[in-house]
Amino acid sequence: MDNPELVRGESIGSLMRGILSDLRMLIHEELALARVELQEQAGRARAAAVSFGIMAVALGIGCIFLLMAAATAIADVLEWPVWAGFLTVALLLCVVGLVALASGRKQLRTVRAVAPETVSTLKENAAWFAKRISYGRR
Image 1 (tube, rainbow, N blue to C red):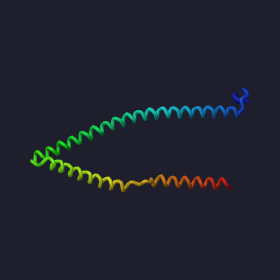
Image 2: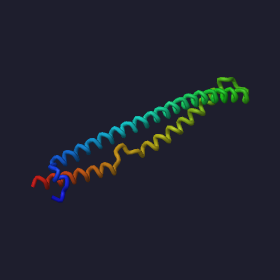
Image 3: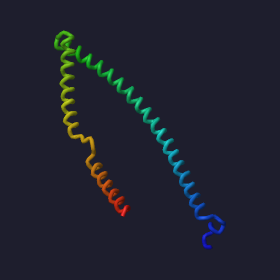
Image 4: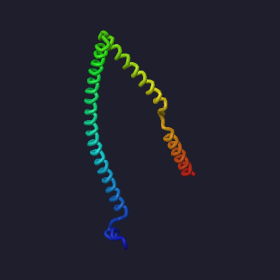
C-alpha cells in the first residue's frame, strides 16, 4: 500500500496505457516540431538557391562580355582581324577546359561508389543479428 497510484484504484495496466499514450503524444509533437523546422529550413535553402541562380546567370553573362572584350582587344592590339581574336580566346578556353576535364577525371577515379567502412559495418551487424536469431531458436 506504499504506492499511492494503486491506492486510488488505478491498475498497472491503466498506468502503462497512460504512459504509452503520453509517449505517443510526445513523439507526435516532436515529429510535428521537426516537420515545421524542416519546412522553415527548406524555405531558407530555397531563397539561397534563388540567389545563387541569379548570381550564376549574372556572372555567366558578365564572363561572356569580358571574353568578347578580350577577343576584340587582342584583335585590336595585335592588328589582327576580329575573328582571329575570337579564335584565340576560344582556343585558350578549350585548353582550360581540357585541363579541367583531365583533373576532374583523375579525381573521379578515386571516388568509391560504395563506402567500404559502411559495408563492413553492415556485414558485422547482419552477422550479429543472425547470431542472435540462431540463439533465439535454440
